[in-house]
Amino acid sequence: HPESLEEEVGNGWHDVERNFTARRRWTDALLMLRHVFQEWVAPIGDDGNTEAFSYRQLVVIEAWVGLLASNLPGAFGIREELRNLRSELLSRLRAAQTKEGSRLCASEWKELAAPVLQKIAEVGQRDFAVASACGSDTCRLWSLFHTLAAEGLHREELIAAGGAGSSSLEESYSPSAMLQAIRGFVDQYFKCLYCRRHFLEQFDAASYDLDHARKDRKEAVLYLWRLHNAVSVRVAAEHS
Image (cartoon, rainbow, N blue to C red; front, side, top):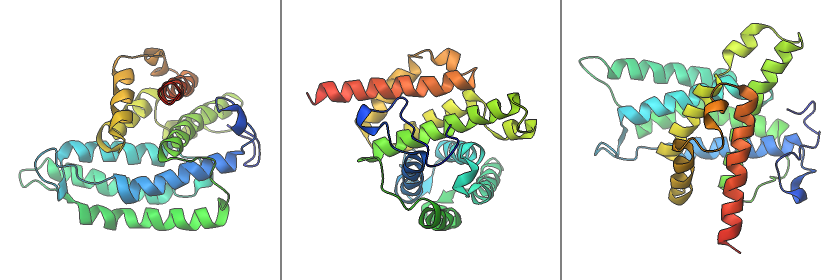
């Protein structure tokens, strides 16, 4: 986790990207977050209804938004908006479990997500108006995943060093909950079908020491890098 937004962060990235700053990586994460909310989160018709989210999809959205609200760095400045959105989603989940039932329509999702998107635009223009370090949505998605994992570890290390209260860590997702939320998101909303299948195969096979990563925040950070690196090697081999 960088001490400064202008600090170079090269660990795990290709050599030509080793001097990219945290601000550029976080810019990519923010860009991906906007794209996800605008384009990726939509009903997929897994229950025959393409106008509203299924209950399963709604569960996944709530967990994903909860992860974002808990594990995004404070510098992103959108925690309050994400918490409000999660509260709305929890209300919909509770309503869906009643006798009357309830559905979240695609148009309603756009209305609920609008404050988050507005805040992302404001923060992006003010604090992250730098060039993207990525050339693809997949790269930006990995930047977002790494940011979420690193923030949880950063808070744990701050507490160990006496620099933050325990509430800071309690607010962040556990490694297991974080990884499960990421898996659910990829399963339901990742638009690259080939990438999705490969990710789920590796995750469900517990490759790259997933079991250990579920129990330890540092191992969760390393796990995502191992999985990311495996994807990079596969893609390079396929295009060689």
